[in-house]
Structure formats: C-alpha cells, structure tokens
Length: 336
Image (cartoon, rainbow, N blue to C red; front, side, top):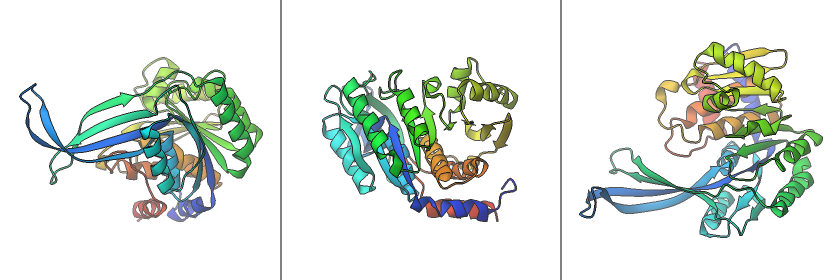
C-alpha cells in the first residue's frame, strides 16, 4: 500500500458520489457485433459468422465520462456528434448512465465517430476480436461549434468540481480551441486533467496530464525503455508543458508521477498478472484520477486510487468501467 492505509484511500472514494465532473472530449460510439463462427465461405477464405447481438457503448471521451459516472459522480459531458443513428444510440446509452448531454452538439458536416468491433467465438469460450472498422473524420470542428462548446463550458463550469479534457485527435481540440478551454478551467479555479493522444503540447498550463509510455516517447522524441529514461524525460516534459503534475502510465511497469520540486513517485501496477483486456484502461485512469482530485485527495493518493481502478478494468472484457464498491473491495483486498 506504499505506506497509505486502505482507510486513507477509501475515505476519498466515498466522496465520489458528492462530486460533479465536466468532461470535454472527442466522443466515439463503440459498436460491438457479437457473432458465432459457422463455416468457411465459398467466396473467399474467410469465416462466415452468424450474428447474435449488437450493442453501442460509450467510447473516447464518452468512455471517460462513463467511468466517472460508474464511480458514482455526476457528469456533464461536452462534445460533438453527427446527425445519425450512431449518435442516437450513443445518447441513449449515455442517458441510461444518467450522464448530462446538454453540451453535446450536432455537427452536420461529419458522421459520429464510430469504431465497430466484431467479436467471434462459441458460448463456452471467451469471444475474440476478429476485426475493427473505424469511421472517423478528423478535421477541426467549425468556429461556430467551437464557440458553442466554449460558451457552454464557461457558463456551466462553476457547477462542476473539476474538468477532464479527453483528446482522441478527432477535431475538437486544435490550435484555436485548446488554449481557450484550458484557460477557462484555470480562470474558474478548477483542477483540469488531460488525456491527449497526439497533441499534449497544446494543453500547456493544465493541472495534470496522463500520457502513456508510447505517447510520452513521441513527445520527448525518443523511445523511453528504462525507468531512468522515463524519469529523465518526465522531469523535462513537466516543465516544458507547464504542468503542475505529469503522470506517465507504463502498463505492466506501473506509473510515475512528476511533481513540483522535481519530485518523482513511482508505483507498481495493481494486479498486472491478471490482465485480460487493456481496452479503455487509460480512460479509467484519468477519469478516476480527476475524480479523486475533485474529492480533495492529495495527488499521491489520487494516483494510487486510479492505479487500483486500472487493475480492475483490465480484468474485464472490452470497454468496461469500475464501480465505487468494486474499487473499495480492491483497496481492502490489497491491504489485507
């Protein structure tokens, strides 16, 4: 437990249900088609699959929002979708999770970002992903939509306890918009967390960012293979990106926090030996982290709570989330 008792962590987890988080991000409809293999096709050397069921789950920034909602907090979601069936299916799923979507605006110029995964296998075995088809348009949103999002953020941010920016490179965050979003959060005195896949350098001034090892390597300009290399890069990146904190997630090697005063805090991964599926684990980490910070947990405790949440979600199949009760059980289990 790294000298932190389970009681210390749990007292902040129990505050999650009192919090409200604003999530601004690239929204994705994650469509899953479940099928059973029947036979080989005569047309080509491929399997014929018999369709069993189909579902749409929140992806991208919507998945981060779903993780926060699953932990008991209220979520005010901002983003852009198309005027199509995928958007309706995604909004229905968000409504079932009681996620607020007044800040989700329609963009007539593009379809809803959609990632379709086909899973195949018999009922007695774990179904495996056969193929994924992405329908994503990644050009910048219009100035009109940018203004709508900025206005909504500024008008409603006071009601939230913290802000999460979830950037999947689909056009919401660009050179014109990103600085405005970060400045609005700072002006409101709110903690802001950033999960940016391709352009973290545009989020200068945010409170904390959570790049994974691959993303950190890309920003730093060379592959980070050892812990010493990670620490050297992290110290430099935190200062250059003007972040209060930088958290580099390292998969099975845990995660490393960089804090003011060149402080470094490394923690090992929770239950990495039981990993089943890492899909969406990054959304779980950043969502849990910003929620713990909103609950006024010190950052050293917040990252440990997020680490336990990641340890749970990687044992689940597909895009999954974690509940507060699961998280409390995990913390207690590891303190026993």
